[in-house]
Length: 351
Image 1 (spheres, rainbow, N blue to C red):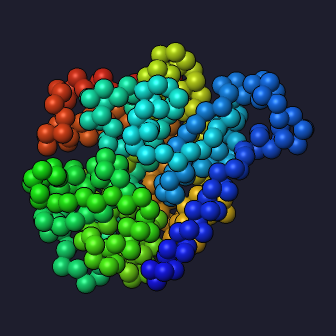
Image 2: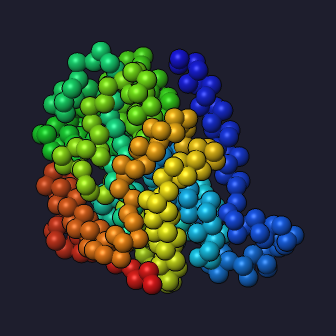
């Protein structure tokens, strides 16, 4: 199975690289007319070419994939290039404005306190991370994690921050200097699962769909589900963060991006099966079980148009405050929670 996983990972990496060359419907129309010059593109796309991180293989990146494939970014004036990048590169891009918007959870909050120049501008979806152990493991609860090794995709990334908050709320320090738990990064989810299978780590913190795929196959037990855990349930897993530089220089550019994201969210809400077809057929996430993928996508709480027109912005603002309070409580933030929550959230008029 491990050899098969390694082979599959290589094939998927190759296919995903090819998928990154796909174009939106607006792009196709341009190419069919035979016009590919830089001047024509500048006329066609009001905001020109931009990079958006959106090739990490996570199923919950659906709004990015759908906005790209259905042409919503293009409709709003963007020639989008989906890129693969780590947390540090995202922070740099946001600071200098070369990356106008990213999705991420409260992992960014301490970084904002330490100087990264971004604001929360919207909510994206609810839980999409699971913690898995081997079927014969004696680990069942968060208290059992003391002294254990936990695999994550990257230090400072979303699964790492979720695990840290889960541990700290249970009185277990996630500080590496305390030696109460050890975090080990794996750049590929399949490698992380392989490390779990051979005993290199005790727990694998996995993005969907990997955790759910292996759970259904009987390869793992799930001890934590971000979507159902008492502390995290019904709260945003991921927010949208906009570069302050872009917000100040061209706020309409951010509003246009949010319109594309919201249109994609609403389309997923109305068309979960078709959304999964696009994600699978374009190789954005490595899952072949459509029924499972649809179940997961429906569980992410993508909003309807009615929700967006209601108290949506208030919901986003309240969840920002919720996680600011949580991080401040465990010592991950030093700022006054009320002031900090107001500082890092900006409501954008999407028109």
